[in-house]
Structures are given as C-alpha cells and as structure tokens.
Image 1: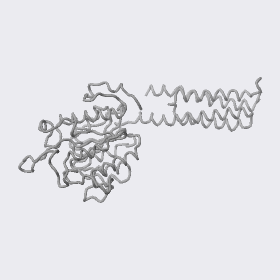
Image 2: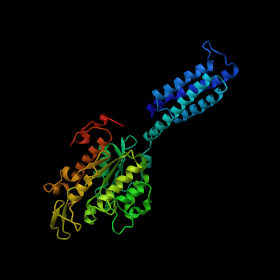
Image 3: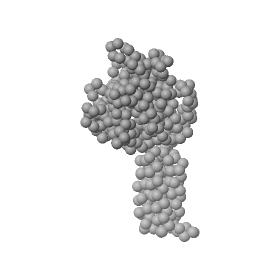
Image 4: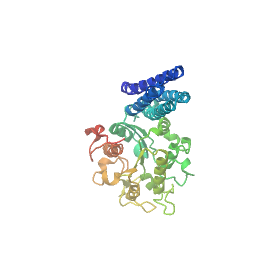
Length: 402
C-alpha cells in the first residue's frame, strides 16, 4: 500500500501545482495582461509550461489518482474558458492544458480501477465455511482469480487435498470452486432449458447474469451457492470448464450434427459455455479440461465392465470419444488439458490413482492440479517447464506479458 501511495504522490502533486498555476494565471490575466518581448502574454507562456508539466505527469506516472486528475481537468477547462477573453495564444495554451489534464484524468481513471482490483479484500468476502472445508482463497496477495465450473471431481473434495485448495496453492490464486456433484456439461432431458439447469450450461448462465442462481443451484449445493454469491466474476482471470463422465453415464448425446450449439449435446454444451464466457468476460482465459481415464464396475457384484477406452454407453460412444470432442476447442483463445492421455492415469496404476474407478485419490488429484496449474500459469504470461511441480519452480519471476 505504501508503494502505491508513493507511486501516486508525484503525479498528484504535479497536477495540483498545475491547478494552482492556472488559477494564478487567470488572476494575473485579469489584472494586467502584460505583453512579453515576443508579443505573447505572460499567461500564454505560463499556460504552455503547465500543459507540458501536465503531459509529463501523465507520461511519467499514469497511475495518478482519478480524483486529482478530474480536479485538474475541471480547473483547466475553467482556464480555457476564461482565457478565451485573452489573446489567441493564451486560448491555445489553455486548451492544451485542458487536453493534457483530460488525458491525465482518463489514464488515472483506468489505473485507479486497476489499483482498486489490487486493493480488493478477498478475505472479507469469504463465506462461512462448513467443518472440514478449507478456504480456497490465497488472500489479497493472490496473483490471479480462478473460477472452476465442474462436477464431483471438484465438488466432493473440499479439504486441503481437494482440487480447489491445490489450485489455489500452486497458482497462488484465489479460487472459486463451483463444482456440483453429478453435474453434466449439457442440459439434461428432464430440464427445460439452460436457465433452469443444474449443469455446466446452467452455472455459466447464472455467472453471466442470464438467469437467477436460485434456478440453478439445488438445496444440496449450499456450499457452491455460497461461493457463487461471494465471487466478483468480473475479476476472473481464468475460467476452468471440467465435465464429461456424467454426460457419458447419463447418455447425453455426444454431438448434434444438425445443431452444433445444441446445449443438450456434449459438444454443444461446451460451445455454449465457451461462447457465453468469452462474450461476457473477453479478457479472461478459458481452459477446457477433458475427462480423465476411468473404469466401470457392476453395481452390487463389483464385476469389472471395462474402461474409458472400450466401454460404450447407450449412445454408442466411450469416454475417450468425449476427449476427442473437448480437444477440438483448443486454440489460441481456449486452453485445453488432456487429462485422459497426458495425466498418466491408466489401467496399470488405476488402483493407486482412482478411488472407485472414476474419482481420483489424493495422489491423483495432486498430479491433476499440478498439470492444470502449469496450463493456467502459462496462460497468465508466466513460464514453467512441462512436468514441473509449481512448488519447485520460481515461475513468479518469469512474467512475460500483461
């Protein structure tokens, strides 16, 4: 905070001095209007100097507080109006001063907004957490804000080894976990539309203000609802979209060739979520996460039925087919995490990495969180090597843009 005040002090003083000089000049103009040897009024000459000072203030320290800049703008506008009764040179100089102050006001307004983001008190907005649930907020020193829109991989584990907490730790981020157990990406057959759907499409509709969260979150979603209510989504740097297995289990159509944006198909649902978030939050990054490797067992007997490579649902597709659809969204504007192929969970280590064939063990979640964190970290202009544990890299010092 002290550094920010020091940063703003110089431009504020310069603009303040400019205001005082303008006022003095106006008084001097009315008293004498004495000509200089060059034929210009003293007022004209001094206004030109003020214009240069104001311009320098904007250039050297564009983080000036907007209140000071607006005051300078108002005063210089008064100067320009009063100087209109003087020489043409005085008018020109006054107008230049007004223009410089206006530029200062605009620049300061923008940077004051950024400063406000820096000073946002995350911890003051954190809801009361149930027993056994840890905070996923890094605090006011967090480097970024992440919103996770997903299923039970996010919703079922809210301790220190849950995905929300791990992402917060690895990315030094304030994470808002909106995971819903059993949620699909797509609107299900029993739901009327995205605006009344407990799905990824429904959550995104609520985030974008197109529907009330009351119509999306069910009574069992009290934690996610409290997180939703505490989040200022305009501050989000990264949205994570992570669905798939429930779409498979509930036999959601994979695609709709006749309507590629059909929210009742997996592909259309992903397209809907990406489009809505990009339109509402154009400066935020989006990462689509593919479902991971999984195995299926018969209820009751526990007999092995097959894995995500071979076991087809009633729609005739496998979990690996979902991955191929999700991969199509990867481009310069949308990140992609190939959980299925690259995370390293497979038939050989499934007992170690999966609790029940689908949900990950703490070790599996750790690998998942590290992989996703690397993608997110790079999306924010930092550098980190492939396969590197973020805790073992000084990635914070590698900022390259933004």
